[in-house]
Length: 107
Length: 127
Image (cartoon, rainbow over all chains, first blue to last red; front, side, top):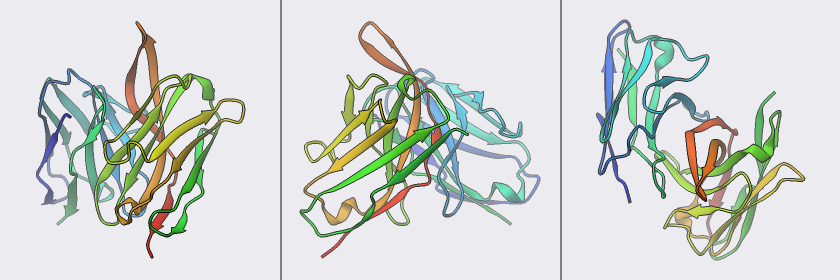
């Protein structure tokens, strides 16, 4: 099975800060990776698919990059409404696997 | 609008069975794969099972293999998860999610995994 190691597990940043979250795959997954945002009590929402493609309707401050085994989600200017937990997901091979999640708090 | 609505959750004793359903609307059901993802209380997301758009391919997480069965009824736009031999560790919110996929050479490939999610249904396994 492919393991997804996500870091950090949590972070606290101020509004306007640039934030980066990383996912590392235990083996190459080409660009078969998506990123999700989950707000408390809500279902996850897709932000990025195919590693770098922005989901329609998602603010452009979110971006994704990477290929192979190293991937990043970047928020260029953190906003208060970005308070949430973020997950990566590899869908290259079964069983599909999520990262452990990164909880983002606003200072 | 495009929508997935789960139902069937509840409280069940260990060892018993439960069937979850997910009703889809607002899109062409027969062109999308459907999956189940769960989230234990206060924990992260775990992929559980998936079924291809035509129902011919099914996959399961090791933690549920042999106990859970995914199926779909393309005439009713529904996907189901039959859960048996339930354990306390199966306690979770279960989400249904849509997967955009295509078939090539007899295999199925996802375009970007889960673009649409249901609101979830809660399952509690407890004596």
